[in-house]
Image (cartoon, rainbow over all chains, first blue to last red; front, side):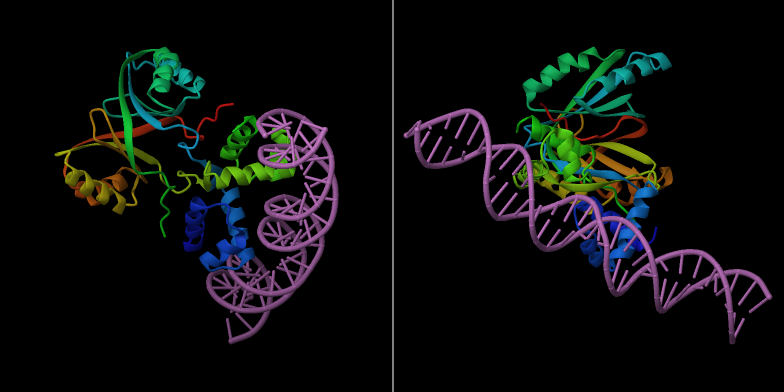
Length: 152
Length: 152
DNA sequence: TTTCCTTCGGTACACCGATGAGCATGGCAA
DNA sequence: TTGCCATGCTCATCGGTGTACCGAAGGAAA
């Protein structure tokens, strides 16, 4: 991991459809050297894969919701049951077990409030062992995900 | 947006490095028809771009932190100042203005607790107009980001 | 210092896949 | 029916990817 690799990771997080030749020029290396480094970053697991960034607005997904979940019990069984149920619902995009006041944080997207209401009834209300839910609607995105920071 | 487009979006969110011919076979279309649809999805803004998925563990970024921020004032000036400051710090990966108990939710990654402490002192403590911070450390990821759900 | 070896970048090129032209087909409205 | 538009397919071309090979730089040991 030198400055070249760091530069490659930064560029590929911004745009992975760039031609290797262009990437090479941008970081100041020949095509083949750059190509070799990219392959190495892939095989070493530094690069996990490549994804298309889909525009949620274009899909009609205008509502982003964060839900803080508190369980009735922190027993292994209760947590296992909850975590298993979370996997079932595609509408739950992310779920993290955390310290702090809540036990879990969920991230959900919906088309609108009515759609969220449906998700709430059909998914969230069915999650087992939940004692409390604190819902936060996203009003505006101040800074959105643009990849991990790569030092160097 | 028919079932072909939906299928394309789902596949490209999983793996955008797939060859068009393979993608075409997977969704049951010829190479060129598939290719045209992909280009159309790009030009229409449905696909925003392409990114490499970087493995944070491999970068040594083991700690994920969510910070709920409350401002002293919800005036336009206070919010503008805060939002401007958030843009300055690369360590703040995401920031969302929300309803609920907090005003803003920040997402931050760090190498370890010591590193987070440094980020806290050098970035978070310098954010203007903050009256309260509620920090949540991610203990375990139950479900991680795998793209937006595409109906159809 | 000399020699060897390893590492890593550069050059050249074969070949695969992206790209786009051209054509076929099927629905829809005049 | 006829023309038009949307959308499919086949095929040819060309650019980019991936690879073989060469050379330079740096380190270790005699």
